[in-house]
Length: 154
Length: 154
DNA sequence: AGGAATACGCGAAGATTTCGCGTCTCTGAC
DNA sequence: GTCAGAGACGCGAAATCTTCGCGTATTCCT
Image (cartoon, rainbow over all chains, first blue to last red; front, side, top):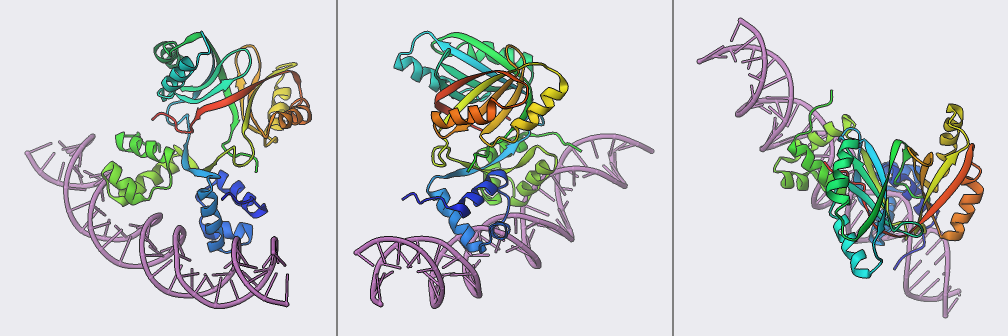
């Protein structure tokens, strides 16, 4: 079912993680393979679930979301139903880009994008503070995103 | 130079942020426009820099990076040269996916992906702890990523 | 050594992107 | 009010690109 990823696959993945607009012919040239072989490998990687899909990446500033905030959340209990309810509710907030269940001092870490700090205040009050089971919220603002990539090391 | 984003643009952006594999014809159907008009709008959005590019998203687990760690870093000083040196050095570590300059209790927040906790220990010792100007590191492990998206609200 | 499985390159068929062209609508000036 | 210019649309054709069948080469396992 899931094949081993060889060096050529790895190179293909490194390329398409950074730019998926390249044609099979251009890829072929970079990995020294024919376009059809490239295409088949990518197709196989997609089918195996290694490649989850292709997306367009937007410029957060140009769509009016220049502010990133990380929010640490502590719940009042760790009861399963509370966690499930929390997770279901947080997934419905479009301003929240990521939600991680954490070890350590707090329970969840959220990555949130806002129009500005006032907008974040609104998101905080209207959405985050109202999530089920929340005991404590602590927000940290990013002054600047030094860099950011979706490309995993392969 | 940069046009206003109207409702049709917004709908296109919402779609291609989630799936950029759709053909212009399929997009056209969803936004009630001709394929050529769709294509032209997307082309314009790309040229305006709203769409930064297209990438393939991989399954972190399937490429052997199931572990996400957030690392809070305090520097010994805030001198410009130290910050610049730190940022340049951290950008060279492929295990680091994001680097944010933060307000508050610490200076930088890093998002790191590792093969497992032992692998993270190695990354920590060999790369993070050796970054220039680092005074203190505090790592928090994600037990589970509840969800994650690259799609900004538009 | 034999044979199955896997992957390759080639080349054609089928889609899709891409672009010129004519039309329509909206805006602003007279 | 109407006329000119800008901007966007749909249509349709040309150029590209994807996609797949086919025959061959290589590998690996028995």
